[in-house]
Every structure is written in structure tokens, then in C-alpha cells.
Image 1 (cartoon, rainbow, N blue to C red):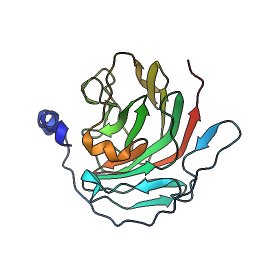
Image 2 (tube, rainbow, N blue to C red):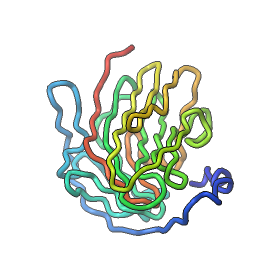
Image 3 (spheres, rainbow, N blue to C red):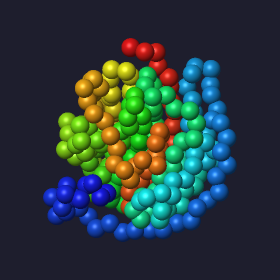
Image 4 (cartoon, one colour):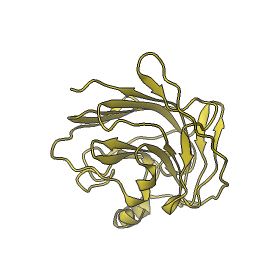
Length: 225
């Protein structure tokens, strides 16, 4: 991304070449998501793209194809990005997001989850910068590879990874698999996203030069701390 150029120059010797791909825009039919009796909203029904809108702005203009395959929402490689945004109501605080994500091909992030944090937004990057970097972008102006949430995970193609994000009025926490990569007090912290990710607000998922898949997306509203 444009705001990452200085960091990418530093990391260039460690990154694999990235190839671009262009897809077509599928028709989307938008309907309210289903809701169960426990206050957990299923954001993706595993069969259709209902409740999701394809992003085609900024760096998503040459997006890849988005489709539902075997119960998963698949975002094919774009040039550079492919993304979808949720069209339903999303709380700003006191919620938990859970999903599973898998890299199908490519070597950049296969799940970029943008979500609200009170009056701001943040993005959980999974598998970026050569394929292993995990972290939150941005915290106090620092990206996912230069703040206290930065970690490295070797992701296996085709394997599903559990992802969980917890946002309360005092805390932001995130897990990838069994590893907790963030546990932050939100007071006096500044959260932001790159301008390229703005079309994904308030809740969206993106891939970068990579084909990724997500499934079992759920949002649970929580009581205030």
C-alpha cells in the first residue's frame, strides 16, 4: 500500500514476487443476515453473498472474483486487492467477531479484517509482508509490522485458522489460532486504517495479491465492561 512503501523497501529482500490477477464482478443480492436466539449474528450463511457488497474503489478496482464455494466465501487474487464489506448493522464497541480463514494461493495477507473500535477503525492483518506477518494496523500510527501486536506465523496453504477479535469500551484483543496477538487498553491509544482500506468500513474483509477464503463468520454482542 502507498503508506507502507518505506516499510516495504526495508523488507523487499525478504519478500516473494507478487503476481496480479483480475476477475469479474458477480451480482450480489443483499438481504438481512439470520440471527439465532443467543444474540449471535451469523454474518455469512455459507450459501450466498447475502449481506455482503463487493468493494471496487481505490486499490480494489481490479479485484478478483468473489464466490461461495463449499460453504466458504472465496476472495480470488486481485491487483492488488479483493474485498467485501458487510452491509448490516455493526456495533462500535462491546462485541466479539469470530471466523475461520484460509490461504488458497499467494504470499500476502489472505485475511485483512477491518472492524470498528469506538469512533475509529482498525485492521487485523493475517499473513502479510511475505506471508507470515500478523498484527493490527494501525496503532498510534504504526502498522502491523512495527507495533507491539506484531508476530510471525507460518501459515499452511489450505489450512483453516480460527480468528477472534474482541472489542469493548476498554479493551481490544485478538487471537489467531491458539496465539493471542493483541491485548490492548484502548484508552489513550489511537487507532486508524490506511486510506486504501476505508471502503471496507465499518466491517470488511480483504485479500492482497492473494486468494483467501473465510467461513463461520459470527458477531456476538457483549455487555459493557
